[in-house]
Length: 113
Length: 111
Image (cartoon, rainbow over all chains, first blue to last red; front, side, top):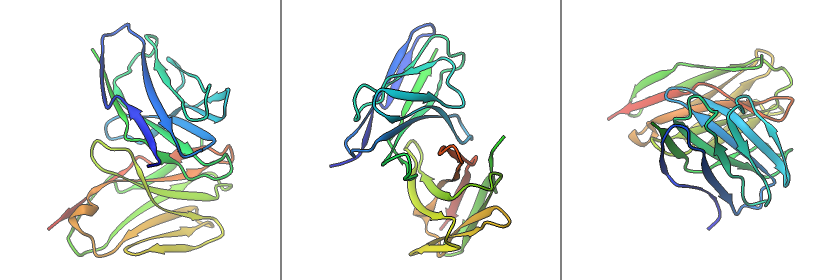
């Protein structure tokens, strides 16, 4: 059963703690993306990776970090430097940089208090 | 900067009626325009897309039209059903190969 998985679905953290969100895909897609979604807003790009061991900042990268050590995995760390981390986080994958269809995971809702 | 504007932000229709959502984009080099449906608490689902060499594309009750000269594209849903109720996002790919999303349209279909 191919697809994109994100875990956990809900995550609660205290302010000042770093937290890592998981994203795994078995679609053999080259590119992976992290977006943030706030209530009533569109999706904003945090980081993306088009090949293993390489990634680029998106529009709102401050306070976040990523790694891409394996093709299947693209974890996102929300650091304590992110001033407003409570949001819905979405991971997506894309077959290759030139094929633009992106497929999304189910999302992780992070609440920081 | 480059952006995608989407209208309306909310849309209410009676079951069986048609619904139309419109988006405009600023990057004349954009050549790929997907539409996503997002149900509450879930990730967006790609429902239809169109490329710049095509003016219209249909898939059963949904269709997308593209006017490259005017830089706008639209989603048309015919014979709406309650299960069409969701938030719909348009997007456009920039010359940088990144997708830029509209702010979404909440569609409610009343029985």
